[in-house]
Length: 144
Image 1 (spheres, rainbow, N blue to C red):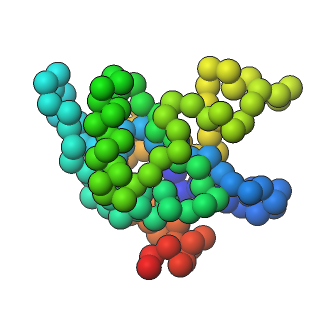
Image 2 (spheres, one colour; image 1 turned 180 degrees about the vertical axis):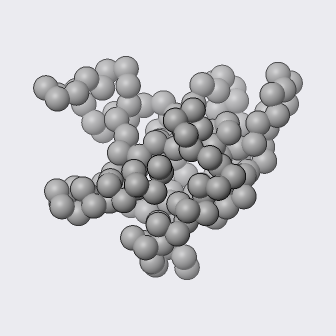
């Protein structure tokens, strides 16, 4: 469950005195409603995505990473779309801040503390409102 992943990451951050956590976000069927078109890039958010992603991406202690199989030209369109809506990502399909060590090899797999991915069980129709609630518990000032 995504709320457990968020809680675990933020509690470990606190306990281990980390400066930041790393959150990965798939695009399709997670943030953006797919249209399965080869001609038109889908650009419709699921409910709550815009609001929640604005709050998350504006935190200095959360590194936001797009984790997508989108084509390079689509990624450019998404970068602009997200920026237009006040959503900012630090990296795309990489996390150069975390390097391989004895306990993990991150040469081909980016390191995340939290991963928003429909293929791993994230439900964009129900989970964004849960993410908002748990996020505001840890970041009460993010609501404005």
